[in-house]
Image (cartoon, rainbow, N blue to C red; front, side, top):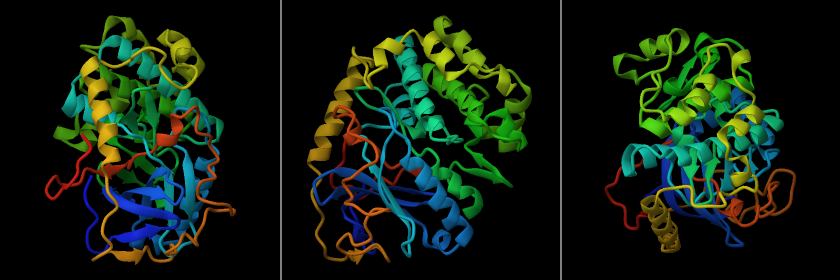
Length: 368
């Protein structure tokens, strides 16, 4: 999290910007607060993408589809203006780090019970996403946020707009209609074949392997992206270190044939954790104690984020309206989300996803 800098807008639509969360292939992401006090993550599209009508049309469709996603396990789309000079979308803010941050930097591999509950939560999220007619296509550790209640999935659907808008970004690979993060792609994505919901099941298997071992099942791209994609399409996964109790479940998710992968309902049953997470939160602590303490500190840090001084900041994003006049699509106030607060947990959802981590220098107030 970084302070706003020169050229950053003060407002986007009905949201007062507080800090920069990051930047990536699609644009910049800001921590923001609505006029009624709700914390959100606002993604502002890059101007060069906004100038491409093909991208704008896809972005418009994907935001519309993402609005239909309900349930506890995703970050809801709160507001958007896809017709602004520079389009933007706001999602609820998730007060928690990414799975990539937790496993790769903060803690290391998670214990088996945590991975089982992670699997159940992600399966529930994918069921909600697929029910809205969306295939995520880019499920990866940086798009899974870790909260005390359970995992939350972000960036579903909206990232697909990049297919026609850009040749790529950090962590993004595009070849014709191919889009995704190489280490977590399904074989059919690698081959450029038709993508179905089974693609997300394969990616789920890769995410669970990473959570359980700290490694990707087909290695990294150190030897080149094409070599990695060949291994995904042709070789068997390396599941060394995956606990025996979940190894078979993961292996089934990683089958090459999409039709041979388990359904999400079957996967939920295999986790043994469906009842534990069925109401949108883990009924018992699902993370190691040190991680629970870290998440508590992160939440406290959010309360310390102050509204920035206006000096040196642009008054509003181009076309966004200095007083929220862009408004949500279809009318109404920015607070009227298509997704309910979900018993208090979903209201805090939606961090800056699909972004590069900003440099650490110059951070005045950090959420730890």
